[in-house]
Length: 179
Image (tube, rainbow, N blue to C red; front, side, top):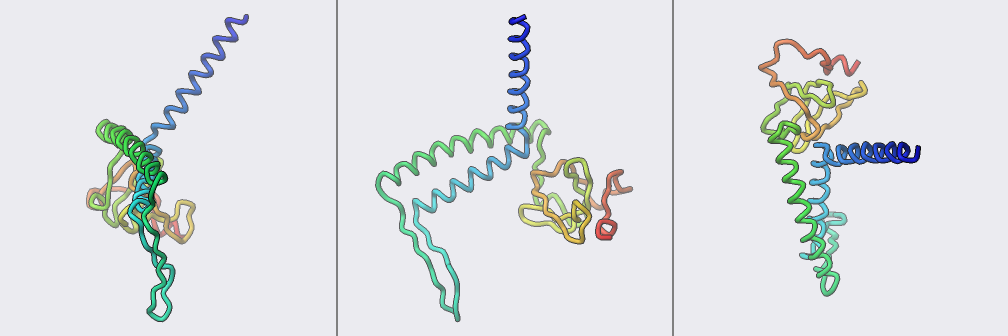
């Protein structure tokens, strides 16, 4: 009886680990992780270099906040943190490249998609209303009169406007979505 309970527990733990690993290596999660790591890397680089930012402008006069480069032990800890993070970025970029090569992930960008094309997001097809640098604008997912933005790495399919013969089964028309 105890052996059977132990086997069930081991099986449950193995299934749980498989689900966790699957979620950790999901293509959208991997790309989001890379973007987040790179953003933190840029923030730390600003700490090392020092930076300035405009707080506000009144009658043509800019009010600027200047931040000096960090020094001493804190600087050394930030450099060490950045080196470790660079290794993480390298690892996850390798994972992402493998996913793209195997067809598990897409690698669309603004040069691939044009206004009027259809894109697929989570099984649903939408007409592209606008192409942005990091996203495409599509009709509201919930049917409102606004548009929603979808990051390129969240897209799972793409059909050029000139290649469209008939709308896909799950097609959402811009005008219908606004009604």
